[in-house]
Image (cartoon, rainbow, N blue to C red):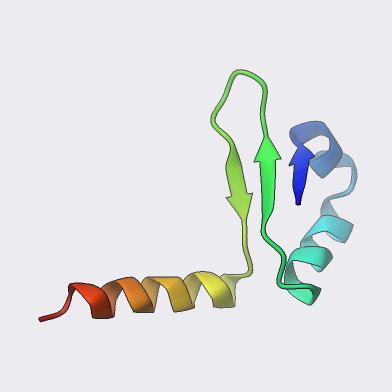
Length: 57
């Protein structure tokens, strides 16, 4: 899902619920700035653990 910064601000609680409930990644598009991704914290932890294991000999 993509959204704008303005739409995110206006609908923050609902969008955060969607990220968690639907395990959905949301890309926040910002004018004149880099885009940002919102992902569930549990998914981020899993990605970080996988990256750590892949670096380990």
